[in-house]
Every structure is written in C-alpha cells, then in structure tokens.
Amino acid sequence: MPKKIDIRGVIVQDGDKWIYNWLEITATSPADVRNAIMEAGGDDITVTINSGGGDVQAGQEIYTILRGYTGRVVIQIQSMAASAASVVAMAG
Image 1 (cartoon, helix red, strand yellow):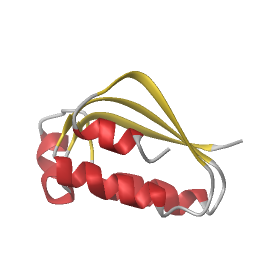
Image 2: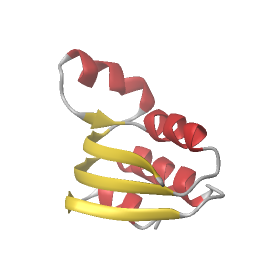
Image 3: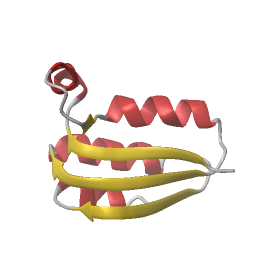
Image 4: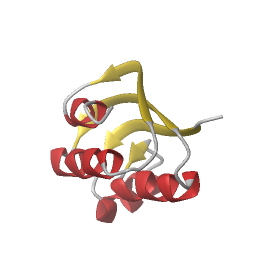
C-alpha cells in the first residue's frame, strides 16, 4: 500500500511553520514532505493536495523533493491546487 502524504492549507517556508502551528492554521512546509518521504523508504507514495497555495519558493522546494524521490509519486487533487500548490501538483 502506498504511503500517503497530505499537502493541506497554506504552503509555507520551514522557518515560518511554527507560527502557523502556534495559530492553529493548517499549513505544509518542505520539511513536512521531506520527513514523510524519508518514512516511505522508496515505496510508492500518494500525495493528496487541498491547498490554495502560499509561498512559491516553498512550493518549488516541495516539487523538487517529490521529483527527486526514487519511488513512484501519484498526485491526487482533493479539492484545490492553486498558486504554489499547482507547482507541487506538477511533480506527478
């Protein structure tokens, strides 16, 4: 069974994620994706996206992380993949 990675809420830089956590706002950072990929260990992954976007540089970093993954990457857009999230969606 493929490992599932959720990209939800605002896409933010790693250094800004703590603010969103503190304010209890759903957000995803490149470190979140990097950590999830390390747990996958080369198995197939399914990335589900529901995000209005956010920081385009963080989105580009997530795209690069996913493109560099050795396993199969399947992208599923749950509701929306706008702005920076559309960059992430292109990794599939």
